[in-house]
Image 1 (tube, one colour):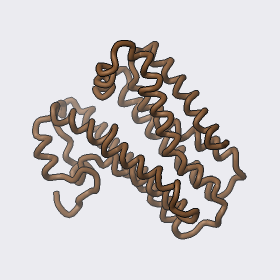
Image 2 (cartoon, helix red, strand yellow):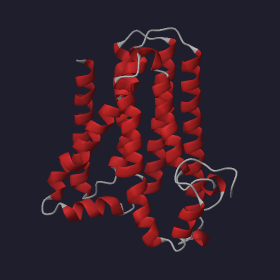
Image 3 (cartoon, rainbow, N blue to C red):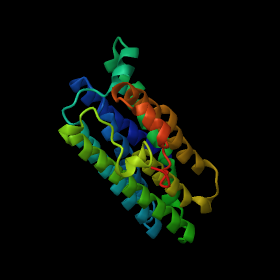
Length: 252
């Protein structure tokens, strides 16, 4: 019942986002909402179970991750036209995409966030004493948040410099992998998975695997690189030299 209630929370928040899209005729703000689905679910889970050191760690890390990512995307997308990914989806689903988007965009994201967020429910309801695996998992998640944040900051600074218009960022963390922000994101979810290992490897494995699939094949790397190859000269050469996700520090 608790898990289904979390889905209802996501649907309600998704419908709110859809109503905003009707006014703006733009669905890009669903990216800003993505991490907030997890924040809302985590707060609900935390309030449902007796508080513990483990659940407190989980909710603090999710709040740091979710609010930081949502704020960053708000700043990045403010007053900008609809993202190319969503423009393509819009074109493929006309006529009446503005109404279809309630399930194509907002409903789908609500369900995906609910499934991935299941790992947070498992982590919070686990009342076992903390072990070295938990410390490892929380440390990996915290490192992932920091890594992703640094990568996003470096990209934002690069794009804000008018001299870099049309150029490709190949310095900082972006020198070691093409998508260091996505690498940090994966560390976050695999870190949470490690904190649930004491409960067994069953349903909890779905969350990090689904997030890995979404980043690699669905809405992350695949779509982004298709656009970057068209927009940025030399991106194919960059692909040949630099790993997709896992940093290759020993070769620059």
